Image (cartoon, rainbow, N blue to C red):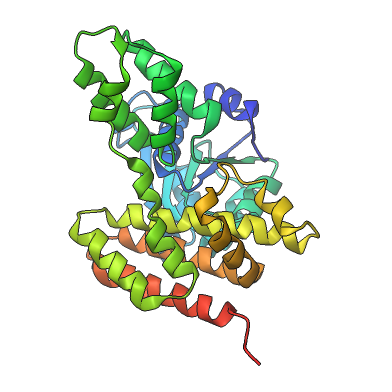
Amino acid sequence: MKLTGALIQTFLKTPDPKVRAVLVYGADEGLVRERLDRLLRTVVDDPGDPFRVCELTGDDLTRDPARLADEAAALSMTGGRRVVRVRDVGDAHASRLKPFLEHPMGEALVLVQGGTLGARSSLRVLFEGSPIAAALPCYADEGRTLETVIRDMLAAAGLAADSEVMGFLTDQLGGDRALTRSEIDKLITYCGRKDRVELADAQASVGDTARLEMDDLVHAVAEGEAARALRVLDRQRREGTAAVALVRALARHFMRLHQVAGLVAEGRSLEQAMATLKPPVIFTASARFRAQASAWPVARLAQALELILEAEIDLKSSGVVERSTLERLVLRLTRAAQASRPRRR
């Protein structure tokens, strides 16, 4: 079952009882975590209860294919339904999850945390096509959705904001729900006992999180400029930018390229395809984005997204050297970009 729009909020409040497994995925990792937590709390009051909550990873399923069925069938020593949460899952693990969806064991709710998954992802297709599973996408907050998140947080703190302030905040935030909440929490603290947020307050408190888009990095990578991309990467690391934030910026950019290239392959013009992007490509970057979308084949963009997901999973594993993981990803993507360039005659 594929969940979209209003169905997502309905499901989060009251999950369909026939659904035994839910895939929550998307580039907005903060929103993914938030929604997984909401689903978990529909079954268990205490997410830290070791008797009712089991934590697994995709690697656990690879090492022991029977582990998921065993945990789902296990009974809680303290009574009540159990939750099995599986992190760091990608298309490579679809075959490990398929047997459970075909022959579910026990009564546990299985929550699967995925990263950025394309429309043709085998993991998405598996969950969307199963009568006992649901796939729940987590797209970056934008437009009215982002404004609602911000207004709700400010209202809960007794703060009002006019359209000018809201315009500034929505321009600066979005892309990661957890980061948005963190920035608004910081703004609320900054305002103290005031009952209204002024533009000066927002400008002084909220950082320019749009820099997390890492325009310099993502364009250098998508254009196959390895040396330039590595220089930008090194500068971002020295400035303290989190490795996962860099990977997410690449994921967002390549997802947008994949969307456009896919629509062009289906017969739309490049301009029509780009017009579907939300938020739209800014004017100053439109020529570069247009060139990238024209150069990259859809299949190669799908492969690039797989590489990005693998890097994100690696970064969350203990003992991984972040610098080498990021550099390896950048080099693999820039090589793919170079292979996508039109050959000169």
